[in-house]
Image (tube, rainbow, N blue to C red; front, top):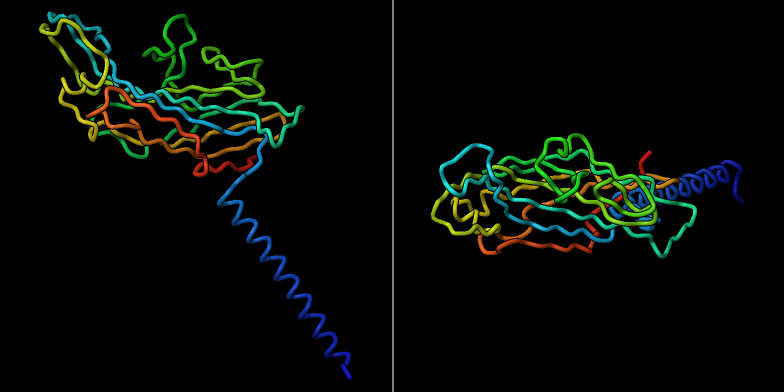
Amino acid sequence: MITEKRKETIKLIVAITILALLLLFVAIMMIKYEVEGETNMPYQLSKIVVIGTVEGVETEEKSKEKWNFDIYQNNDVYFYIDQNTNNIKEDELIKSVKISNIQIKSAPQKGTLKTYMPNSEAGRIYTYDEQFLVEEKLEYKGSSGSNASNLEIGSKGGQVLIRFSNSSIGNYTSDKDKEIVHNNTLLKKIKAINEEIKFSITCDFTIETTKAKYQAEIELELPTGNLDEEENCYLEKTDMKDIIFKRVK
């Protein structure tokens, strides 16, 4: 016959076991969230395209030579955000997309890193004007459609742009060249190699909808190719398993 004391002991053991299992379940879910993050966001980062180019920018100083260029290595990054077809919520729209907390993880041996937003004036997408430098953050507002020059993204998906530029890698002057080709040949002219100009950055990428906010850290190693061998470089990334979005307040 089971005594009352033994019954209480059994109840206590059962209660402790259930509590331990609940705590274990919560711990597993927390670890799973840390590893996987949000897996069914209404809007998702579907693709990142990086276009790496080399450009000679005419100096403002007067020169006797025909050509007088500062050499820039530019990395134009396109982030594509699409509506999740498995979680369509017609009443939830993109409010804004923000690129912030840009940090240099590994600096180049040559050149100075600068970050530019698209040009809001007529002409080229980017200009080397201080008014278009990104200081603390670059924010695109949700709108009827994507318009980079107005810093707008479609409220149901679109793309946002940013440029990471390694400026003033070196100067090239010449009277001998009949024409200048703006690609990796400019790096060869100033004897700069890929190892000297490569760098990496991290940034926070935030998608805010009308109901929630999601954020992930993104790391980019730039340029994405080898400019010792390639005239320019191109990368298209569609596997986003390494980019973990989490809900933020």
